[in-house]
Image 1 (tube, rainbow, N blue to C red):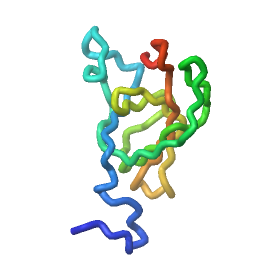
Image 2: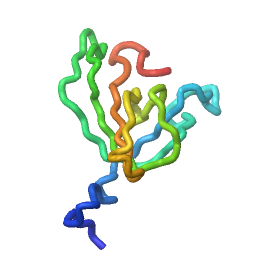
Image 3: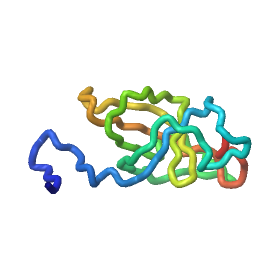
Image 4: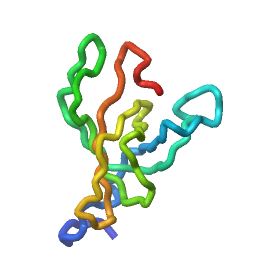
Length: 126
C-alpha cells in the first residue's frame, strides 16, 4: 500500500528514509588497527531523512561555523544517542549536537549535527 499523508498521524513515509547513516561511539575501539570507514564500530545503522542547512563558513579550509549543518530524522530506537556520538554520512563524520524525541511519541528521533573538521587537516578523524 502506498503511503498517503491524508492521515494526520503519518508524518513520514517509509520511502522518505533513504539516506544510509551510521551512529558511532568514538569511545569504542575499532576491531582492527587500521581505522577506516568500513572498520568502525557503530551502535546504530539504518536509513534516515537528511536535511542540510546552507552556509557553512570555511576559513583556510577549516569549518569555523558553529551552526547546525545537518538534521536527520530516524525511526525511534531505544538505543541511547548522546552528544559525544558521531554520525557517519558518506565517509564524512558529523558531531551530534542534540537529539529530540519528536512530540514524545516514541516514533521518530530528530538528530541535529554539526559538520566536523576541515578540508586540509586531519581534524575530520578521531
